[in-house]
Length: 168
Image 1: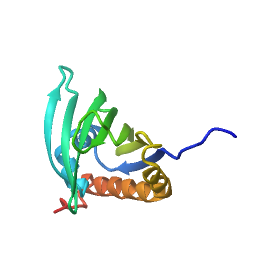
Image 2 (image 1 turned 30 degrees about the vertical axis):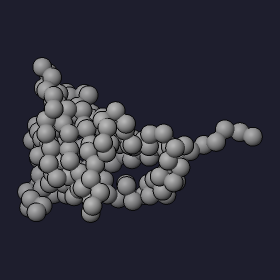
Image 3 (image 1 turned 180 degrees about the vertical axis):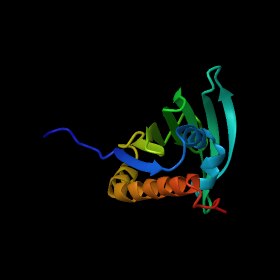
Image 4 (image 1 turned 90 degrees about the vertical axis):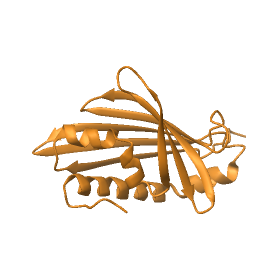
């Protein structure tokens, strides 16, 4: 019998054109206040650490219905205005017991009068053999996750283009 494969990783690649200067687009993605605007489950955040080079680590309080959880997001690569990579983890009561981790690599380049945004997202379920139901559900919903990220990126692009209003 061969190894048991568990669908624990979801990879999403997205891109968008934003008719705004590269510096403005980078600054927008770097500002944690924008997490609250474009993630319907994010309630508030707290900056927990700032590195001398400007990289930050933030905790975001999340809620959907009666479920509450935390996300810790660390900027691991910060190269203004061309690249911003974050690594984050989802947890409920103990920061060191992550349920889901995400690495998001955002690359920005000048394209015409605006900015091209290329995003690669790797979502990984931690300890999938202890959470087989979550692993299967995650695998089945990988298309939904992609659509959600595409929708968020579209809203960001519209907002930066001046066509979108802040989301209530």
